[in-house]
Amino acid sequence: MGMITAWIAGLVFGLGLMMSGMANPAKVLAFLDLAGVWDPSLAFVMLGAIVLASLGFFIARRRTRSWLGLPMQWPSNTSITWRLILGSATFGIGWGVAGFCPGPALVALGAGYPKAAGFVLAMLAGMMVFELIEQAKSRVASV
Image (cartoon, rainbow, N blue to C red):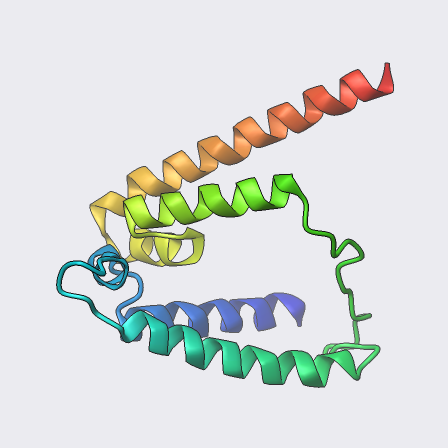
């Protein structure tokens, strides 16, 4: 049941990104271009997502089990670290340069945007480098 629910959620997410135009990097870059022809539509998409997600979190916080019967899992670490700030800044810079973030990039890749392939490959390479660094750090810490 979990796989079906995940598939449906991904389908709804992807369709929403396509219908709103947020899988198109030009639309995102037009939002970030305050000095040019600014397109505020991304702000409205974000606002709608924040309102809907806030409602979902409000309901979920009152539950101990998900609607699929699984235990609710919440982050245990809520501290803001330099590592988090640096990662967020890197994410934002990459988003501003490419016009993609991970979810829309995968949707755009499936829709046939050529730029998405390069972004997804770079994203996967970055994830691999991160994992290699983390493994090296854990080996050094265990010695």
